[in-house]
Image 1 (tube, helix red, strand yellow):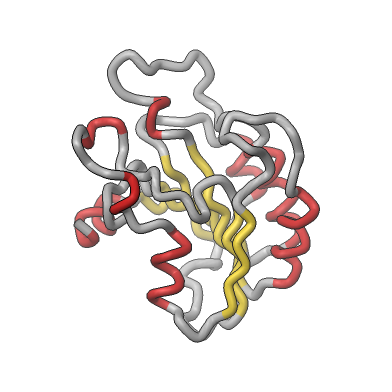
Image 2 (image 1 turned 90 degrees about the horizontal axis):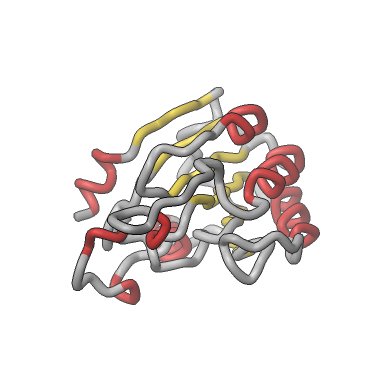
Length: 171
């Protein structure tokens, strides 16, 4: 499952930011998918979210000697519009040697009967990306989604973009 997730990921942009060094000591994981296990996707049927590996769990396992700050996001929900946590996200980005900005759509936003009329990132994720990427130029956006998205705003601010789609249990 991990190998499939790796092989399905699509590097959309890299202006010399990736790969991050395995010697990176201070890492900020920011965004609604930073420590969220809901990454398996709509079509997983009987899959269990709690059995999926979050970005935070994966980074901790890969870099056990690194200090990791996790700022789940700006809002109580992925679709929210309140800027809760922006200050904490910017502070974490300024502190870090590298930032992984974990953005996307909830897995229930794609799949049969789950269409949306807006193909941009929901809520204020574009605004979060602009603020975080301005605070640290070593920022890579990691996307979780089940359909094509308009990434014009992200492309304008992010030096690296990796689309994970919905990578399943080992994403």
